[in-house]
Length: 53
Image 1: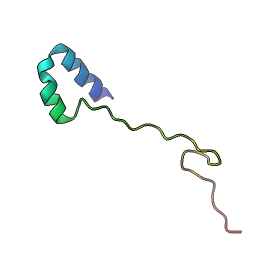
Image 2: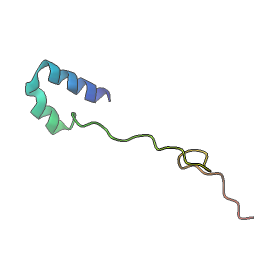
Image 3: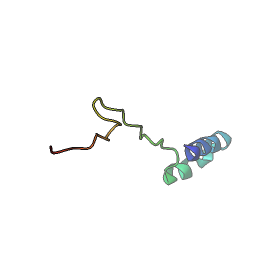
């Protein structure tokens, strides 16, 4: 997020940086988000310990 913000600030200062920043992949936002908690589980993926008997 910090890299993205600095890259956007550089664009505000000098739009000629766009091609270099684009090639470096610094203008693309990281789209990963926190996975939601599911009902019946402790967290998004963590379930309670399985017992056979």
